[in-house]
Structures are given as C-alpha cells and as structure tokens.
Image (cartoon, rainbow, N blue to C red; front, side, top):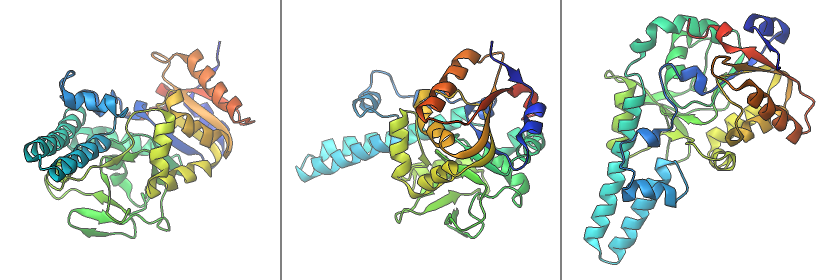
Length: 320
C-alpha cells in the first residue's frame, strides 16, 4: 500500500520557497477538461469533425489553417465556390471553439468570487506557480493580488483590448506551460493578454476569435511529443518550459495524473534541481497505485535520484 501524507505535513517537510504546478484537478469544479473539441458541437460524422482525425490533431488552429490554405489553392484554380465553402468551414470552426469555451467555462469572475480568497491563501504558500491549464480560473484568482502574483506583463502597455507584450525580464512567478485562452500571439511572435473591456473577458476572447479571426495560444490534447513540439515552436511556451526545468527547492503538483501524455513535464521535473516532489492525489477518485507507478517510471526514465511523496489533495483546501 502506498503511503499518503496530509498537506500540512507535506508543507512542513518541504521547507522554504516551494513551487507549485496545477493541472486539471485545480479547475474541475468549474471547468471540464474533456477537451474543447468534444464540447464544440461538431457532428461526429461531419467532414469538419473528421478533419481533426485526418490531421491527427485536437488543435483548432491546425485545422483552420489547413482549411484556409486549401481555400487559397481552390481560388488559384478558379474554384471559387469550393474556396468559399472551405473558408466558411474555417469560420464555422472558429464559432465552434467559442461555443465550446462558453459551455465549459464560468461566464464571469464573479461566478467564483466566494472561493477566490481560499484559493489565494493556498497559492500564497508558493514562490513560483506553473499551470498546465488553459482556462481562466488562475487568471481570475491572481487579479486578487497582482503585487504578489505576477505573470510577466508588468512592463506592458494596454492597446486595443490587449496588454502587450510579455517580457522575460519583467517580474514573473506565474507560468502558463500550455498557454491560455486569454493569451494571443502577435504577427511578430510576441505574446499579448486579452483583457476585459466591460462585457467580460470571455466575450472579449470570443470577439477576438470570431471577428479578428485570431485564436488563443493553448496546447490542445495530444501526445507528449505533440505538446512538446508546440511548446518549442512558441517563444513564450518555450520560456515557461525552460523555467520549469530550472526549478529548485521542493515542488508540489496538484490536480494531475502524471499520465504519459505529459511525460515532457516530468522529464523536466526529474532532471531539474528540485529537492523533492510532493504529488497531490484525490483519494476518493484517484488510482493511487497507478499514479505511483507512473511517477516511478518518469523517475527511472530520467535516471533521477529525486524522491517523491504522495499527498492527500483534499487536505489542501484549495477552494475552501
């Protein structure tokens, strides 16, 4: 039987300056990560849905780009009706992404307002916070104390509904390892953050997707290799990943399963300089032996001497 300790005991053992990585379990009360494609409302047998399979991706951007490139080819061959159909399908897919975001996500920050103070108290115990989530929950929580929680936009300016740009030399202790629905790349490969202009940031994101025809920067579901390729293709994501690899002191993971499709995350952790890994498990639902086995495999694959301990996630009291 695998030993599991309480959260307070883990914090006492961790010592000073621990770091944290949150994943799906952090958001599951408010945001379901069955992946956005499942919630997009696309008919299972439709060509548009089949195109994701044909391209071996869950990434809306990849499919939209393929449709728009195909439309350019059709126009070059004077197939205007076919080109219009493909362009229309690309717009339909943008709308489907907006639909998926709306049906899976709280509409406004006020929807979680009662739980934010408890979450701030939990997060305040850590020097650095990494997230694998691309929802807006952490984004909303850190607004409670922007002096303590910094996302690298402290030297940015506001323009056209965005805060721009992210700078690696700005104070930062929040890193979005897999991007976020509020993050967008510019044509110059810089990063800017969508901000609320009065009707809520979800509406702002929706208009950016459907009207400006820009897609958020987030890493969709897929294999570890697919995710890592996307990370290294994007300067901001690559920077976040490199910061994870440079982690020191004790490191906590909350709300994750250590699954093989995120092997790149554990390769980074088990090859870093962290002193110990504290891995939170939800005892009522988690397969503890399976998680222990996955962590052991990640550890051995990297030839690591870094030890790990399982922690009861319910005793962390993240959302009160």
